[in-house]
Length: 426
Image (tube, rainbow, N blue to C red; front, side, top):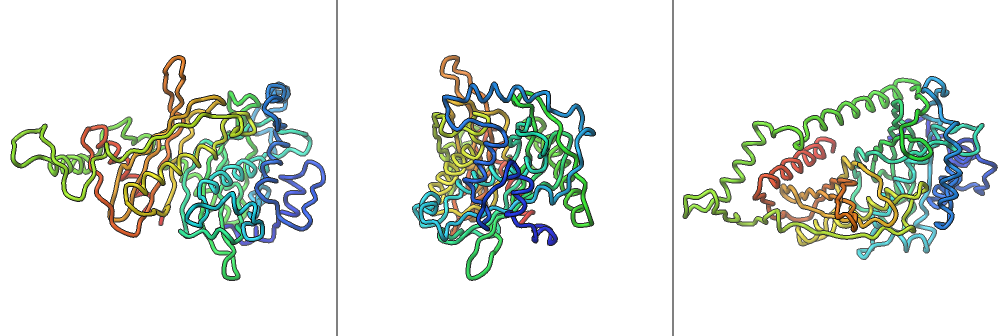
């Protein structure tokens, strides 16, 4: 949870003096909602609200390059409370807003929550890097990685207010870790719903090269612990990348798992490596896919005139959820989201291909991997943009997923790794 001494900070004052500091902000005693967050982001960057004006807005941002710091030492040190933000989502009091978040099952569309978390993470980082002397920020802050989203509660009520809080917990030279918490007012009190950790990177106004961000100075043992956890998270990400199955061979134990899966599918009536039989209560991995296509229209652009990362997360989540639902034969609940890597930005007008794959199952758990890539219709070239990992749970046990090829076996092991990491953090 957030540090206790941060709880006295209410956004009515916080946003007026820091994140929402460009001129007086009238909140009438209320914390802002997500529409105000996104409007403020446009003001900070100087983004155009009309697509036809985006070229001029981009040209205006180019002039901000000379305002970038030459080194991190040139920037003032920030504290964690400098970036603390609280935002409300009034689902209980705003029927129009509630309609936007409502799903068919009379619950909350979690894809919309992912969009909100992405916007909030960006604003938190702009609060950390805010310079009162500048009218607009020369930094382009974008999502690099969703390190982890852990669900503390599976049921999100569609008619109860939601509160988001968050602040910066770790800073490198050009990257920022932001932790966020979501709670919901129910039965007279706010109860935790999820914890999220995002890693953002700062770029120049053209979003072409890295830019320095303000250093962070922890105050007190609790903040020191948060900062050290950020260092641990960074080390863990490096270790996981080094041990990726795309780079190195599986471990001895993992090789035994793959061979056991292979032996379990051999036809006992024949002595052949080619004759494969699907075991009872199982599904071939090839038959557990769901694919989708999105034409990337300007409506879904972010403040830098590329496709909004939250939109990509929402679409990937909804496709992954649909796959888990079809596979398990019942409505699944999200347990965790982890290791969402944003490899390349998605340009307006792109053809975005989404492919979801059930890659691991255990009991009533389903691990789904969603891969997104951009297709250039003229050259036919495919470029990976994102990889998403979702862990779902159902009310009943699901069929076992069974790989056939070596590539599918690597997907299986990768899914198992992500699943085990999720269980360890619960």
